[in-house]
Length: 418
Image (cartoon, rainbow, N blue to C red):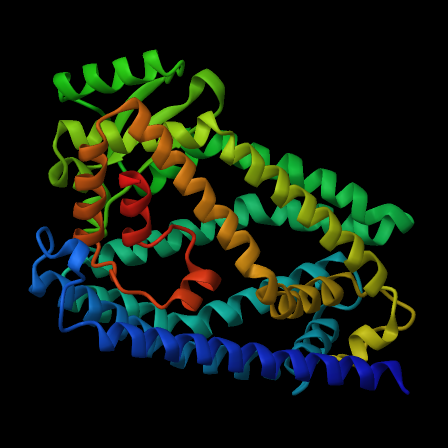
C-alpha cells in the first residue's frame, strides 16, 4: 500500500480519536461538575460556602463549554494546515516571493506563527475579557493587554529568530546527525533563557519589589535556613495588575534563586499559611522535581528530534500530510512545522503518565511542607487558594487523570490527614 496514503490514514485516524477522546473527557467533566454543584462535599462543608462552591462550578463549566469550541476550531485548523493544503499554499507563496534559501525558510515559520496567532486571538480575548472578567478575575486593561502583546512579540523575535536560524541551518548542513547537534543547541538555549528570565525578561512584564513585611521575611528566611536552602532575595510581583489569581514560585539557579510571591497571595494568606506554601515550594527543590522534569524534557526532545531526523527524509511524510516537498531543495521548515502540528495528536494519549508523575511530585512537596511547617496552615492555605481561584472541588476522575498536574483538593487534604 502507498506509504503516503498510509500516512494520511494514520493522521486522520489519530485526529478523529484525539478529538473524540477530548470531547468525551470534557463532557464527563461537565456532567460531573454540574451534578455535584448543588451541595458542598462533606469534607469541605465546614470551610467552603455553597456560594463559593457554586461559583467554582459555574466558572469551571463556562471554561469547559468554551473549550469545546476551541477543540473543534483546533481540529479544523489542523486539517486546514495539512490535508486541505494551507501549509503547502504558504510554502509556495513564500517560495514565489523569496525563492529558495534561509530567508524563505524563516519567512515560512514566521508566516505560520503569525497566522496561527491571529486565528487564536478572538478566543483568547474572550477568555480574558469575557470569562475572566465575568467571574471577577481579570484586572488586565486593554492598554496593558496591548503592551504585553507588543513586548511578547519583540521578545519572541529577539530570542526566537537566532535559535530558529540555527536549527534550520543545522537541519540543512549538519548531516545525518543534525538532530543531535540541534538538540544540544536547544538545551543550551533553554538553560540560557532560564538564566536571563528573572533579571531581563520577567521585569519587562511585571514589577518586582523586595518583600517589605519584616516579620514574614524573617519567618521565611528561618524556614529556608533550617531546610538548607539559600536565596538571593524575597520579592513581591504585581500579579494583581492582570489577574486576581495567585501563586508563589522560585526563579534562578543555585544560590541566585529568588523567592517570588504574587501580591494577591500576600493579601489572601496569613504568615503561617505563607510559610507553609513556601515550604511546599521548597519540597519541590528538596526532591529535585524541577531537575527531574528538566531531564525528562531534554530526553523527550532528543527522541523527538531523532524521529524528526528520520521523517524529514521521507517524501511520504510530506505528501501524506498534504504538502508537496521540494525534491531537490530544502524542506527543513516544512518538516519542522508538520512535525509540530502532528506530534501532539500522538503524545496526547500518553499525557496521563506525565500528569500522574506531576501529581505525585505535588504529594511529595505537600509531605515536605507538613514536616517542616504547620500542617493545619498548609491545609487552610490550600483551601483558600482553591476557593479564591474558583477551582472545582468535584472534578471527574478520568478528566483529572488526563489533565490535572495538581491533585484535586480532596486528595491532597486526605493525604495530609492520613
